[in-house]
Length: 332
Image 1 (spheres, one colour):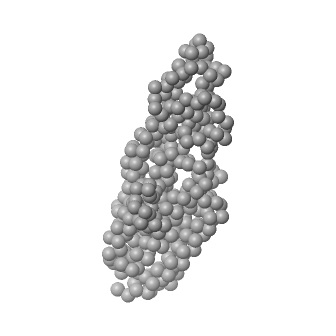
Image 2 (image 1 turned 180 degrees about the horizontal axis):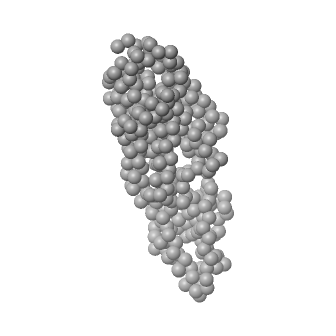
Image 3 (image 1 turned 120 degrees about the vertical axis):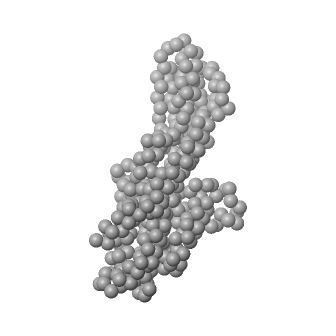
């Protein structure tokens, strides 16, 4: 019953709905529109057995055919190999917008090849070491949305419960604090799944990102969503316990700090070195890393992945249970 009540609050409360669903979508569109355009400036290296000149500073001619390993380790976003009436395109991201330049390259190669038909083949190269700027931002949007679901929605709900004396009433019932916390976390986890899936689907439709996960990785994805919501929920509960009526204002300040200092939206290199250490205290930084690992980006090993999730879950349950118990002991 309490799970259903918390879920309804997330969906019916205008502030919670805006912070959990609407604002992440706005961030997705805003940052996607800015960083998505930058993909047109992708660097491309090309080799051709015919003399071809591409009038673009981002297209670099190669003197020899690189191996697949060299392509993966290269600094270029795409490598094109044209030989024997065939054009092979090795691209490191599905977000590259080089269709026009590629058609120009193909026409020039066909013209230099006495108009003999040319076979064009595009292959995605799994480099397992980097994301495009747009993909990085989209994952960051998800990490921040889970922060909002856990911390801001938690502060909003628990502050209202305290303000209207609901915890005083609940303290006279046989309700278990741990059961209350699990219901709250379960509702927020489901909200987090909905929010993240909305971002994944819309980013695919609007910007053509390729962040939809394979079915085999869905359990890992749900694990990261649940653990991140849990630790952020616990943070929201603690803020409500410590600051009570001013908790919402404090959470908004903390939300802003996390956005700028976690490194999920803006590179940490933009900050003075003395301020970069703040990122280690922000939960979105680690949530972003966990999601990167799911997308085969080697930011950590598998042991650290499961350890971080375990730490988030344990800390979330311990801190959340303690705070919820204290709330039920409060007398207005």
